Length: 206
Image (cartoon, rainbow, N blue to C red; front, side, top):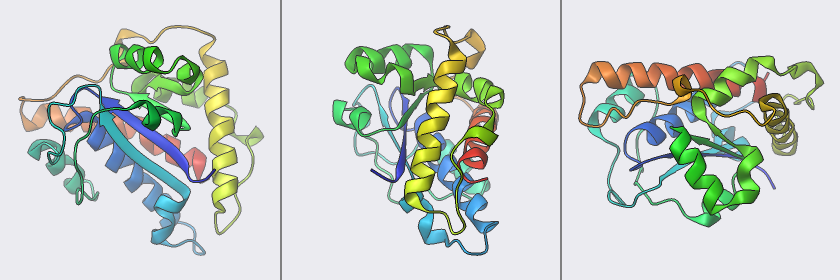
């Protein structure tokens, strides 16, 4: 069952979802650094962050250079990344699916209707996360145990889904597509990604 698996989805899998993939991994690594008994090598054993695109035009390509610059400048790692097209099995294996836009959320749910309660627009998830009472979630030991982190993450996703109450994402929940735009746009989008993934990591590893 473990690790707790987060799938990030955007259009071509070279800008937004790769930044989200690597910035969540960075946030988890930074949380582990605050736990003396944990090790950096535990990151992927506890939380597996990966990504895919609804289109396969860029399959096999590296992260878009300005996206990679944002990840590196924030302390993240861009090595061994290769874009890929979203497949049904990626969704099936994910405990949480975070999309860049509402259109991509609809694409995921159309492909796998049973994933509706664990699929959110990233901004939507970040907006709803503070409404969840984290004190009622399953605890995480020190050093963190993969089963405990998975149980906590699964309970968190269910709580955020309940907080959604069947409502639709707001227009402001979408991430702008920065492809072909300047570093300033990529920086703003990366900031918005961090605003969601850093609190997620904080709840998973309190």
